[in-house]
Image (cartoon, rainbow, N blue to C red; front, top):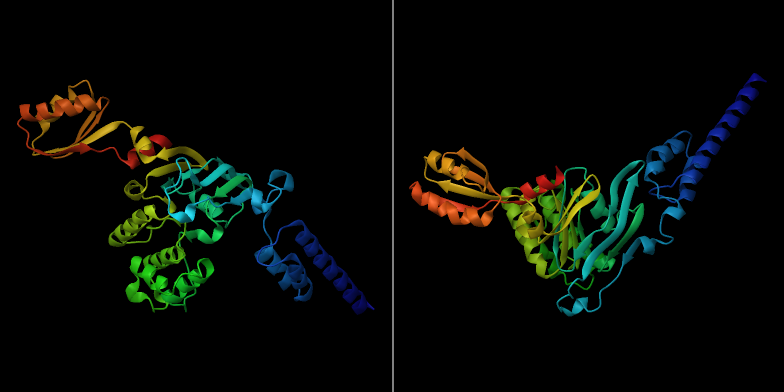
Length: 389
């Protein structure tokens, strides 16, 4: 009798636990597999393995679930609108003001944390748009939503290109290690542009500097080579909109230069949206920038407009000694800051650029200073720091 009672109690407890898991399944969203499949796993797989698999792998935490229906667009197409601009394929110049990417009130929340807070992004058609910001500012979240990898909590996204004509390079691309570089890119070709000839695969691998490794298995690739391979996969379908997350982060100086040259050359073929923490890269290849910090877009517009927001500074180099010249410049009313940070190397910050450019040559002659160079030194880093401080 005690044994039968024990078995009965065990069955009841087992049924209650299975029921609790199924109730939890009904209340949460599922990932990787449909809910009916997860229900089958919970019931059929030996307890508690099925339940553990659900809680560890299949269950989406509350903070990451999609918002209730009243907080989001009624249909997926309302939250992510992909539209084609008429005449895009003709090769004609885009009309003034045409946008490749537009977001309105774009918001992404994880629980109480706002990764993106009401972002109104405007990416002109044909632009190279650089999204810059400190780590954790929301850059990757933004690009993931544009690429369709994540759903926004609120707001809308409009992209001028159809989904098959978008290319994406994630920050740390990974591929099945037994595939060769040729096979990886050919798979991307089949997914994006089946009409492209097989020669296109070799062409893009050569463009990114992997011609010599085309038939090597990518399991032995360095991180920089994987970055190049990911870029080749993004380019093989001749994308109209190219989304690049930290495209040069894993490359050596030579590789960075090659990738930046390639990105710069794409300006005539596609709209490029890239994120990076290397401000010099943005200044070299981008014509439009967006500055994002703590999920908010602080600035958006032409790069020249951002640079114009900073104090005007110059880099002056003369043959040392330069003490007399530095003292004479400091005495001028337009000089805000004069610093000789190395022998003969002087940084000037001025509030009247025209006056400084007219008077510095006279001061050089007066003090018999041997001029090496005198050039503007306002850069993106200065503008970025002034904007985010």
